[in-house]
Image (cartoon, rainbow, N blue to C red; front, side):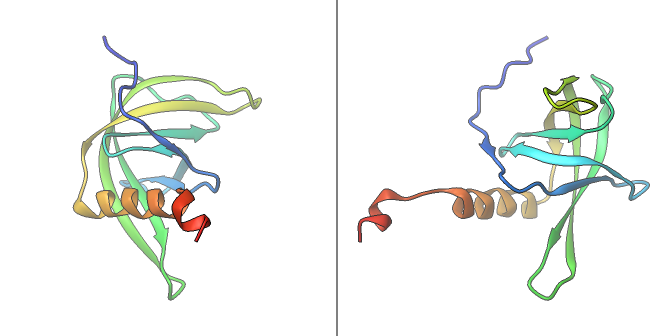
Length: 119
């Protein structure tokens, strides 16, 4: 089974919490993200070759949250360098357009444009 990532992912310096969509219980934090996948940082290992129903709760300007629900398949899970934490790689199976909008917003927010810095 192929598990190496071919798509560039952008590291998130501030973590967004990830929830089980069916129970609304927190399961970890978003470590990095791309259009087709994400890495979850959790306190328990994830089951590999299983599809998960995930929910991202994105803070809005008015202090509320926007839920982005997606289905993702866990490709791998291993212990992080931080004790009692695990990194798990997911392939996004099904996501709404809001997920792509989140990726673009994060890319814009965390990107550095040297042309703008010299102006």
